[in-house]
Length: 203
Length: 254
Image (cartoon, rainbow over all chains, first blue to last red; front, side):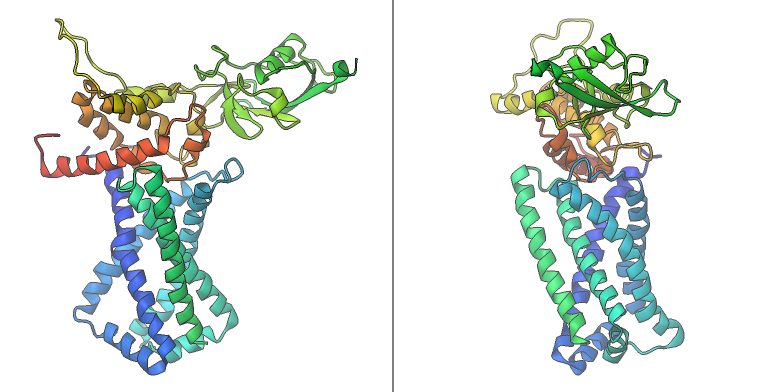
């Protein structure tokens, strides 16, 4: 037991995807949604998040480290799979493949997004506000990139939530797994609506 | 008279030995009513001539029970792993393609080495230890409600189809696959087997264990015996989660 950490690593990967990464994603999209109420409301909400106490501690331990662990271990998981959609084109097999595909895409998207909207501020003092997002999203290619990025994130989270419930042994019966498929679909539609609506508010 | 002119075309992926390169050969064999893939292969064995009239070696395969209970004749038929004995020629799309289950090391042609599955069964202790120096008397009784679903799990014939269907069982991973996991659930359900429950759970919490499952749920689609493999895996997920806490915090029930 002691030498083998695979079980623990994998369980941790599953847990971190939901808590805190999934929770952070939802919170992030909710705060973004202030953009629909105009520039001032968004800047006030973003300013509030910026001024949270222990900001660096929160950023490092609630966002950065769990996200990096989830991403790196996720790449390993994605590349050890041998996708076989041609053999079984079932719904769950599609979800399996899409989960890995969106995961890899999200590494590219989130790296870019973190550089553009956080690290540039940290190193070069680029102001993070409504105008910055307005500038980024005025480019139609960037808008498309961000929409695909947000949809990938909401999909990866919703479907990951479903497999989290299976992997921790909460949904065992086929019926409960089916019901949770519908629930995860609702989460996906709901979060996607919030996320994409916020993006379009900057355009 | 016209019936006799009918032929069946088979495209078979062959391989001369474990390390040889695979190649394809096409065969056209005379059609007979009620043929299955096994009888088609027997026809090729009788007359090993390809569709181009070239004489070749007979195609080799494994078989035993011919009634889908032994699992020996598993192969990939028209892209899906299944047993050749229950693959009825009249019900298949033509031409029929036959390939070995590449998840396993190939011995020759359609014969694969499934010993990794038997090693997995040993690893998870898929048996009930009752041998001793004296008679222990009858064991505890099993509730009928449990026996009914446990019986379904006991239908596993270690055929390897679920491993072939699983995207996470491959040369890049050491996942033991759905079949041996379901056997853990079977033997942990047995009242006497349950006495060694934690040993089996700890075995599947090791390298290549249950956490490697990616929930593609192909196994339950593929299983020829209709075993609820994904339910078994989810039920074991619950068991190992509890076992993980027991191992860490300590428990009298471990």
